[in-house]
Image (cartoon, rainbow, N blue to C red):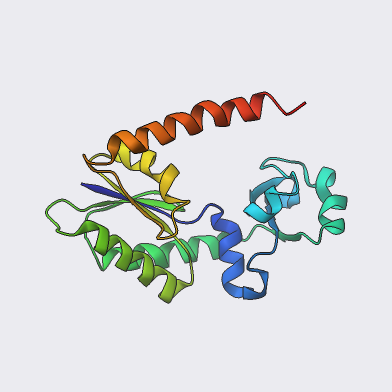
Amino acid sequence: MWNTVNVCNSFYASCERIFRPDLINVPIVVLSNNDGCVIALTNEAKKHGIKRGAAYFEIKELARLKNITVFSSNYALYHSISERIVAILAEYTTNIEVYSIDEAWLDMNGLSDRYALACQIRKSVLDWVKMPVSIDIAPTKTLAKVANKIGKNKPSGVCELCPKNIRTIFFQTLIFLTFGALAVNYPKS
């Protein structure tokens, strides 16, 4: 059984919020090297129509008008926060596969009550690093990624894919993928 630990929807912006708690619920964008384009943004910034990959010069005036906080990327900080989170994960299992700076796989085979353990891991990361994470549990890594689409939006931040709920979650994911793609490709007239 695998857990996916997904560190936030916007890892870089969440790292910045650790040191600027006054920016919780404030729109944030993080820019690439040399401040060329948006590489991370919060849901609050997305509500203003900003998209990942947007050139900074194109959104600069909007950011000023909408009081969107803009950060230059700080890769040393993001790497340090990621290492801290992985160290916390190592307290719970030795079988960790770091997938990216903001995602890891944990092998939870043989452990009982994985849901409670996932909630405890989530709480530890939040308490010790001040980083919100979602944790998704499934029999395979691929299914854990499917659960991730649902887990990010659950208040508990934990989604477990098991035989009793797998059809429901697949159906929700299929609807999201189908109608989400339609919404993106066919704007309202």
